[in-house]
Length: 111
Image 1 (cartoon, helix red, strand yellow):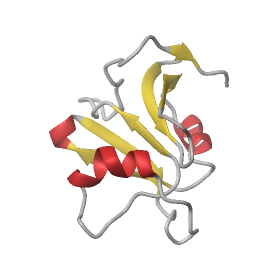
Image 2 (image 1 turned 90 degrees about the vertical axis):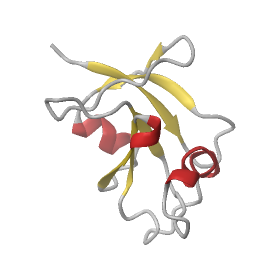
Image 3 (image 1 turned 180 degrees about the vertical axis):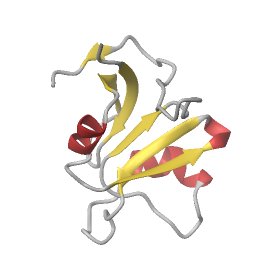
């Protein structure tokens, strides 16, 4: 059975972040990151994991102002966030990503 988790999805230029359910698998996350190499950044203070394009700066992806505003204070001061960002819950005991606690009523993302 396919397992779905709820995520927060932040794209540069979007008016606001989107929250929805997606399949908890590499292929789905890679597609949401525009086929970039996936880098994960754990933010223990917020009990979440950020997934982003590892090569985003090299590719000169646009700054992600929403992600920078929310998560920048928890990262290296000299760093900035670019490109699309997926936010999940923490990694569980089986090394799987988990759902964020829903902030609003959730919608299913068409795949």
